[in-house]
Image (cartoon, rainbow, N blue to C red; front, side, top):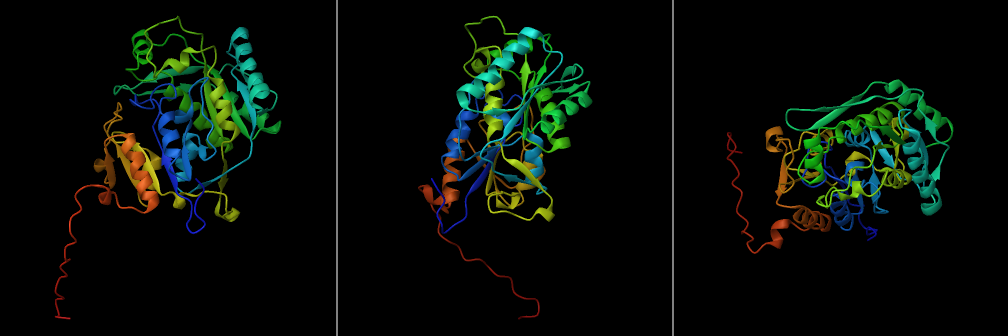
Length: 363
């Protein structure tokens, strides 16, 4: 619904950190229903690719900002604004390590996005060296990773920008030797995404250095058929590429506005215009929450456990704990309407007199 002309828009942030085994949002786009529900009760929802990407599945929403994680942290800290666009021209960067057949699968997905969705892409760029992804796993179970040739990735992204791209989609060849037990747990909807942490490193690098929207799709050989796959991870079983959701998201991703010298345009959103942020209750150590909790309503969702154990209370963050995302959506709707949540319960206590201390000089 459009905002009333008598009040400013209501803006919320939804964060589900990647690579930490979130029960909701730790799989193949399984937090997308949460984003759809929240987008229906706010004017603008700001979230990140981990929430929106569902491999070959996605859901376009005009009032959702698709913002890479590093860029979201910079926005929350007040360093960057988010400027909406009608359409980005997307530069496709392919890892030189991708085999010819697998490369063609991704190029066909990109051509399909042009022909079927009407997206605007530049000619693709292949890195001048294999990027060399290495996967890592922390003792907590959270995943992360590195790339051996970040310089090659940045050169390719710069070539795409020189060709007219305003957003970058990266496809990197990931190793096939993922721990079999870890992969099986993930496919059954029980473990941590073994690729997610490394994916975040790739997109963070491009956004940090080049300040353009970026998202990543891993290149992998299709897995053998398994009829017992969990619905939460099933989107990744549908084909040869995860690229379609990335291209759809980047096509409308906001551009980053940076520097006080630029001033503020009416369309650009800044951190001090955020009204609420929603996070898992056990994953409250992220930069976005630490920055925004000083001024926005912080909502911690208990029914989304993760591999972490960082509560809002342990960081001195005043957050409202809710049992589920259903309750979070209701709290956002009440907050946007200016209705105190307690007024929606059966028990509303009477006001009490506030005792004012006596001035030591009797005045």
